[in-house]
Image (cartoon, rainbow, N blue to C red; front, side, top):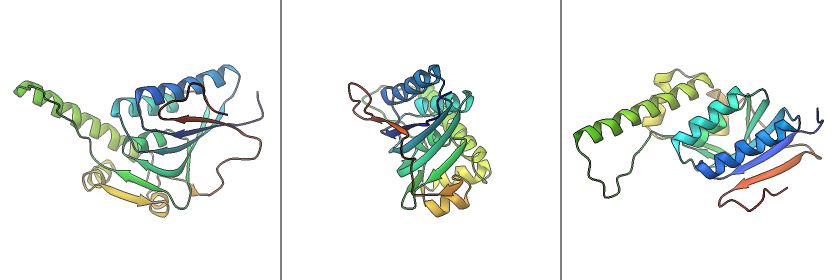
Length: 191
């Protein structure tokens, strides 16, 4: 098994392209025997679908995942961040919790369409709250309240809430391989 840890700098929104690039990188490294990953996360959020999928994938693979907030982890980016078995933050980072929203772009929606959309939003919000609660010291209702109030936490507050295990400025060790996922995606991952 390789001695070096693979560090993935995820500096991107949570989208189909970026999450697929992240999971593909992990899959390829696991084929090479890597089982120790650090994912440096700074994300404005994005798609609930892809954030939930990434979280479940990271929690379900046979690898040690460390996540480290190196800037701002917002919205569904927090769910991706919670995919880490161990979670860190730099001292000057922030975390934003808020509810799920849905856009309407010149759509003609009848009552059933609106009910379906609202049910979907409620389920997404509940899933997000359960994930954050499972990876913190909070109860689900406390997370739901924080989401409703659009709560922003600094690193110390995130540690108090149990979202992170510790605050540390060092992101990785000398000699660790660093791969970048940013948006728009580069033709090939930068190393």
